[in-house]
Length: 116
Image 1 (spheres, rainbow, N blue to C red):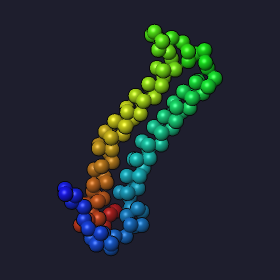
Image 2: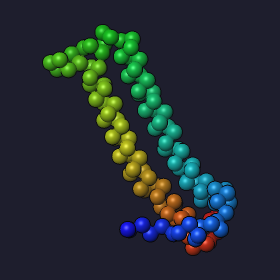
Image 3: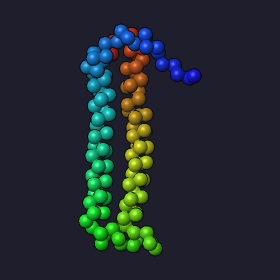
């Protein structure tokens, strides 16, 4: 049904620990981690700041922005916007930086070539 993945028998003789130790796989991990960890850290700080403001800065969070819409609601909506923005950013990054390397590694494994 559109899945062109090799059967389980085709990959049973793969030395996965050797693949994980290869320079190509290490480059893939390094690129992935260099994006994910800083962005995750920034998002956690942003979320923690929101929670702390909601807990301890009631006067600030209750400032009216427009009508009954206050700073707390604005920052809460920005949390959702941040989630979508980071997701789109990661997808674009993965398509450009990670997927070509991962595809190359997969192709080599499927052909039985050594991943260097």
